[in-house]
Length: 202
Image (cartoon, rainbow, N blue to C red; front, side, top):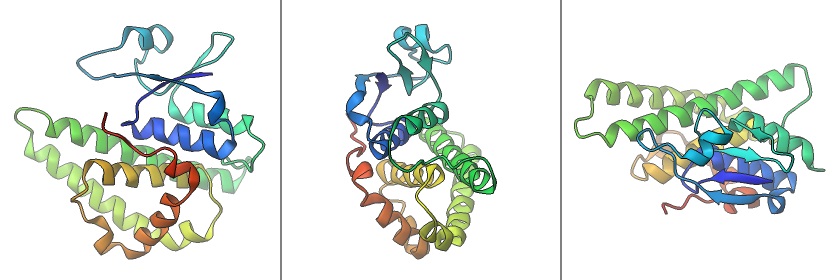
């Protein structure tokens, strides 16, 4: 398998955490790829009409996207405990958390993009700040359940979102007001799969 990959992408990191948890990371060749709103990658576009990473290429020529699909595919390849629960309430709750983590990564990437503009719109920046505040409050309220439950795809996504916040906004200081969430994230960050997939700004 080959993966269009960037060490800076939280969605790529989520995929690689799953790959390590499933024991299949060694089967993936990483293709360093840069995609941006102003610079599509023609090789990615040939395989993924959305022009986004991660994009996973299989030996039979198929391409899988986006990160949700890739994660579930990789989860099914490994012999470890599944990160995607089977059908039922546990799966719905896991997918709910997965959606929350993915949504957080989405708005953090958009926030960073807005800050990179010559004249950022303060109304948009204020909206992102409000979303972050609401996200952290919701996760702090859920932190006991996060700590008590099994490690699954929702926790992977949430952990990757918080790690991306640390990567791009190290000055945010979110732990001070969210001690239970900070304690949970410390455990997440200590997992070998997470330590093997650290963000690098290169």
